[in-house]
Image (cartoon, rainbow over all chains, first blue to last red; front, side):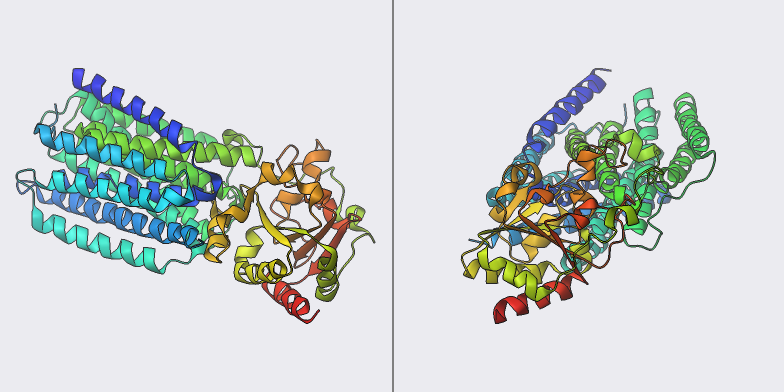
Length: 93
Length: 462
């Protein structure tokens, strides 16, 4: 129960921090914000990695490795495409 | 308690640092100057979190490497090759992958957790539910955006009752899972039901509302990751997931405000043309003035300030580069050229800004709607390219119109308006636009790219 309360505290605080900073992102950068948050939601990668254990039943390993692949698409694709877009905004002076 | 609690203090410390880097990264996005380094900070945070995680005992490195290489290659290839006009499709796809990854992680974690407690089963159920809705909903959104599926609203009678029943069924299975944690099948029933829900909730939403839908699905993909964080009791998943959840929600709200519609109305309402509105013939009859590129070129002779108002039609016609060429010619003559961007001008939040940035338009030239509306009376020539509903003055004047109260760019108040458009056909709202018949408005009919190209030629000759 204590751990749950701690987790909920973290969740609520993170939502608040999110609201505070994201409302300051100008409309010009809303598309990079979305592709960048695609990349951040690839954080499921962490969960996928800790679920691939050597002592797993086979099905669990298959699920976890598929999750690693999907999350990696988000992480690599998300950060790279965001960089590509932001570089276009920067190249003018 | 699930067996995933990482009790090595310093791994959790690395997660705290990674979380701070995500937050710093998003903060960097508050200005174009700091955005590139912000994105890199965020990426480094991800790398740190991954490396710290990989140091745990008992991981199956070969399999992790295999998944990572496959996913990394696919993601990298998409990122390098995607056209800027297709970014909305790409984001929809990535939202879906994020949702699917959460479904699989929660599923795998649940299979290897011994004696899960209530909190684990409930959050597992929620991960499956939100993740699967995100996955199939995003696939439908992707289909609509890429025009594999028809953009119109697809619905059938009793859909809402059907959705309510499927949703309740899924929640009942969450309860089942809690009462009997050995019933792994209950988890997959939740996932299947949610997968159906994702489809039936997204199909009835029309193409014009896609900016709202992909923002909302973006939020869901974050919330699914956060729910997975509760399954694994892992703070970095909870924090990163919540940040994405908050970001998607804010963008959803901004898009709804820009269309003057409530989220409920976008998701469940129907947008139809009002039956009693004036017909196209009443509005346009004999009053529309057609013009030629040469005439428009002459308009610029006495102009000092020019405003370009782009709509999605500009992206469809791939006209952003030639518009930039036109601006170059005008700027050489000492004319100030700016761009007025409506929040829903593209297919996702901020899409039009990216398209113009790609065409080398400096971001200082991109003006927000409210900002430019204050100065619109000082604009000598306003050129509307491929936009319709977002410049329809009826939104201000007719309270019965389907777009009544929607914020618009008041181009009708500029001294002269030139509308580049294929025909007088209506936009998504399905209503005629009295702007086209206004005294100060000239229509330059034709494909956006071709028409502006002719205009640039006329400018150079003139």
